[in-house]
Length: 586
Image 1 (cartoon, rainbow, N blue to C red):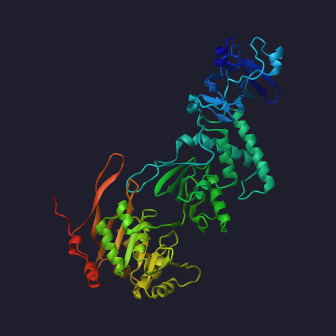
Image 2: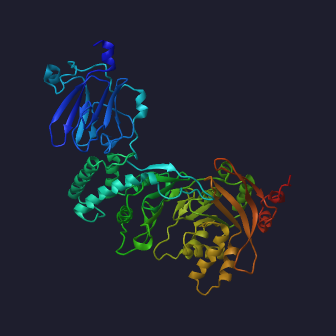
Image 3: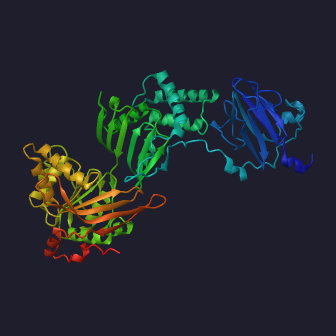
């Protein structure tokens, strides 16, 4: 045969190993080899789990490519089910039914001497040097992506309405993969009983053996779904059996601040201020509950027998979970991780979180020690605004109390109130420090009451944040919480106490495009009713939603001159009344 023809279709050997049988070698020179159960194929594999025309091996551009021919049980390369043309190298294994195939360039010596199983093929002594197993090829781009990676992948979730949210439920495309993972885990529980929170080392080895057997069974039955792989199935099964499943990678990522699981297969996380979906999720409600129990046990606070509402402060963050029959779809989990937040008013202006006029006004309020309350839902930017306000007071001695986000400067004194410490008295002592300032996260009614009592005893310049969906709801809920701790106090008196304690109110929210905005800067008007009367000083006005979901709008004063303006001027701030003037309409 001419040399050019040999380069187009070199001699190569297909090594065939059958489960429980012997190894045989077939020599080919053709550029295409068909594999199947019946005669007429170039390579016949006579078993019931092999289709009549099962797969094809091609030689192109110095590479071998295997393609599945819509077989019933699928074709696998290195235990990954393939869905399109896939390059195979010398060390790769092709799984077809009960058979394992390997392709080697050149003819085996025994075949070259005439002792092969197919003497009608033209042998060629030695190995064919024209085959370059590592040379780049245009077929590299066609190599199949075998489903989910070994660890959970994270993709951005679509935004909706005011808060960036995660789609509409779990990723249905991952359901077959998760069913296969659950089947492997059931094989372990069927052999060893209930899955424990912790395994002994000798049992772990037994578990690994059962997992491998179950995975092999999936492959032999052709039960590995298209778009995934045995490797991905086995990796996730081991992750759920031994560790925390999809939570492991998220907990290792310092950019992730919140993890939420609304259903076992619907996992989301907030990373770098954006909500993202984690895929794949857990394979079953039992695996999710096991992860919750492991988190608590490793944090030294194991879940008690029959405990349905689980709340723990763990090294990884603050965990809240519902277990048992409380939810119809299995456990529910939210894990908020403490984070270090740094910011400045100038940075907020550059990001579009506040306007320059807002920043100037808030800077005056901080310098004149006005009490400010910042309200926003969790992870909606309230901590960033608090950090900017603390930065404006960086020359003072800041004493901070924050359970979730650390928004105070490095030099701040951080309080930790636990046990039988009198929170109210502790804050009063901290506020008495010369040039001291309290920066507080009102994370519980007790802390909120202690802050109000400290301000009632003369603490000024207090910066406080409260988690709430909006300002009006915050001013309704906070007095009710105070009444619960002070049974003899009326709701009207509690409302007046709250409204009289804070001079300026700031509402922050994350809009549907994912960007945090200061929606309003306001003060509370006097009222005889328990419901608050808010007077907006500055407001963000939404103008339109652009193509792609970006929210366009503008900040502007409302024309209302706040009472606090006179107080600022009396304290020496150069506050001009034009700052509050509404621009003339065009």
